Image (cartoon, rainbow, N blue to C red; front, side, top):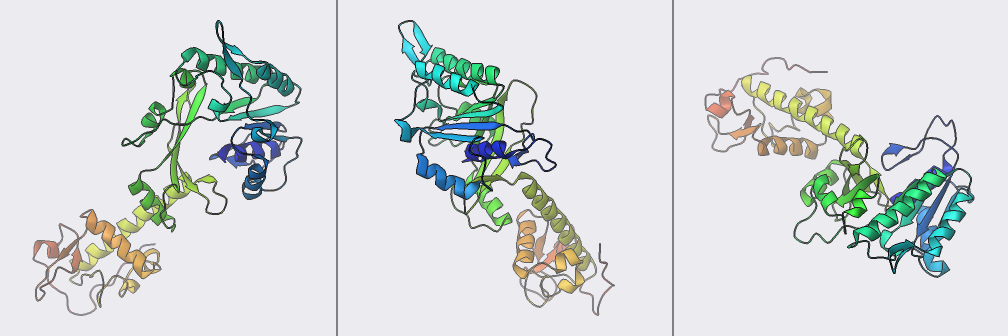
Length: 353
C-alpha cells in the first residue's frame, strides 16, 4: 500500500511544482517521470480497489505502469540456480530491456522479493547478492530508484521494539541487507505505545493501527528517526503522523505544566482543588488560563490522573477532612500536613497567556 501510494505520487509529480507531493513522510522531488510496479500477490481487481482508495486524481497511465503478475501467468523469477551457481534468467533480461525503453523512468518496485527470486535468497548469500546486483544494474542503467519489499522473520515471543531489532528481524541471509544501499523497516508499535497514541488522536484502539518505521541501514548519512504511522480508517494506508504527534506531545506537556502550577498555587493560597466535586478542577475552571479553562471535563480529569500517576501531584487529607481528596504538589503545605484553608475569595488568580 505504501509503495503503491509512492509509485502513484512519483508518476503524478511535475517539474517545478511549488507544492511537492509527499509519501512515507517525505516530499517527493518534483520531476516528470514514470513509475513501474510489479506486484506478485495482488491481482488487477485488487490493484484497482486500492488505487480508488489511496490515489488522489487520475495518474497518466503512461506514467504509472502496474503489472499485476497473477493476471499474466504469475511472477517471473529474475534469478535461478544454474550449474555454476546463481544466474540471471531470460525474464530478467527481458524486463531489463523493456525498462530501458521507458523515458524518464524514476521508480521500479518489485513486490515482494521472494516471488521474483528463483534461488533461495533467504539462506544462500550468493543468491541474495546476485539478486541485488541485478537490481543495481537496472538502477544504474535507467537512473531510477529500484525498490523491493521483503518480510520479517516470525518474531514469536520477542516482538520488535526498536530499529535495531527491526534490522535483525529482516528475514534471510545478511546479503539481503548488505546488498541494498538502504533498508527501511516498518513494524507494529508495542501495545502500550499504540494505546497511548490512539488516545492522543481520539481513535479507538485496535491491533495493527499504529506502526513505527525507520531507516535501519544506509550507505550514506541519513535521517534515522523512528517515525510513527497511523492507519487511515478508510483506505487502510499508513500515514506518517510523527510531526502531528510531536505537536500533541508538546501541547500535552504545556497543559500538564500549567495544571501543576495552577494546583500548587491554589493550595499555597489555602484554597486547594479536588479532582471532582464542588471544588473540582472543572467546576472551578474559571480560575484557570484559557488553555485549561476551555478543556472538556474528562480531559481535565485525564491530565490530573497523569500528574497523579507520575507523582507530580498528590491527593491529601486536610484539617476537617477524612478523605485524600485535596490536590497539591508533593512539597506543598497540604502534602506536608500543615496546609490551612483560606476563608474568602483568596488572592486574585493569575491568568497566564
